[in-house]
Image 1 (tube, rainbow, N blue to C red):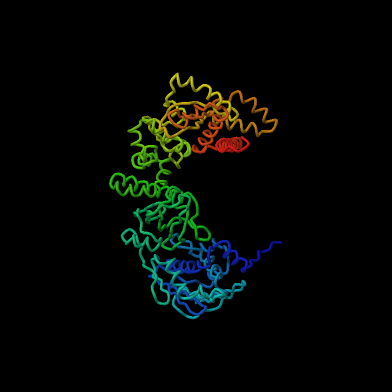
Image 2 (tube, rainbow, N blue to C red):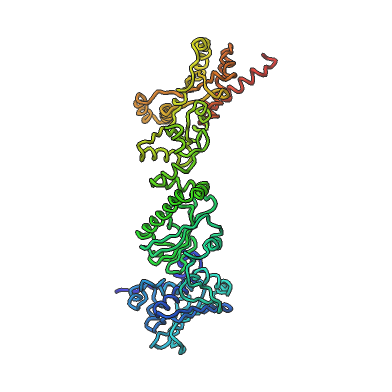
Length: 575
């Protein structure tokens, strides 16, 4: 024995209001869609008239109307899309799904009345209630068309009021090609604002800003036309900007995501499409192959706009890049044309000021960069004093751009800055000074051996820097390996011990600057204990100035050296 599912209409309405539609305000859009579809089917000069009253709303159209059989099939049956097709309401130019659209009106109404007549058929009155009941009876004699009357549910009266309905009808239907009136006042313009309208004023009204520029959009495959407005102020690249999307001139939603690639966060779009598909709620775009192709086509048009600016309006390009350089750099990671644009036009931070990659290459040949911001801050002034240009690769995308440019252009050389590159330009002390320094270096090395650090003395500029803590990549790997081995259990500790023979043995270096007056005084201290405290203090200062991580052993040394020096500076009666 087979049974038929019983549908709880109240449950369906609850599902619609809490999980499908973002707001009950969409009921106006659904009514407009049904009316426009009926007019499209009738192929007449259309008029949708909306009349408001206390707790009631009436929407009338001069469209094709329904017969009694169609009323039963379309209004009282949920999910019968095949029957809808048979009745002629599935043509490509239609906006919505008649049955589910009317059902959404129960979000704001307890009772819906549909008075409809199709040419050559008797008029029909359908009454539906939110508890699932409905009735069908003969209607009054009238011209072909349909009138939908809503009786507000308690608490929803404001959503059926004149000002609210007028606002929503204008929001959703202002671009519709049929005339829509609310209480005898037209709310439709009947035309798209692009390409010849006052788009600056339009952007101000829709998005609240005056655009830096306007980019026309045209994707024939998706039946899409529109414009992209370039934001005049910086925006967080992680923020997903929404776009205003119309389908067949009906507003889908004001904040649609996924229309542009992520790198185009600097643009806000208004578009109309005849081919893109909406989701079930008709408040988002269905993410299919056509949407992906449309997104790529729009990306090509934004990319072309940037390339044209570079050749025709460098001043405007510079203004744009000063605001939205992150988006362009993100695009350049995947696009050769944008990479060349970045090379020529986007200034990057270097230790010699802000320079484009082209300017940096002209001055220094090799694109040498520091991998991290801390490393750059530590070595920038020292490298500049040695006439060594360095790009700050710690800023987002910079290091990747340098490496990619070297990959696509065989004439470009890119090198990551190693501390050894800087240290190689330092001057060794003369033989006499080196002989005098041996007792001090013995004391200093004994103090820092337990921290795995080698102490050397060199001369370098600027003389105001007393010491540098330099860690090569091999030394950094060795530190990480040792920390992992110390934290591992017996099993993995044994494995790591076996591997330790293959680990580089380079150690970090504390480079004391012999050109610094304080360092020269420290190296001349005869008291081994005081000299050791001074070296430990210089070690701690170099760690902090270089932005290096402070290990527990380093923190303990900083405390003990500070207290030791303080004790020597302020002797008590017990001394």
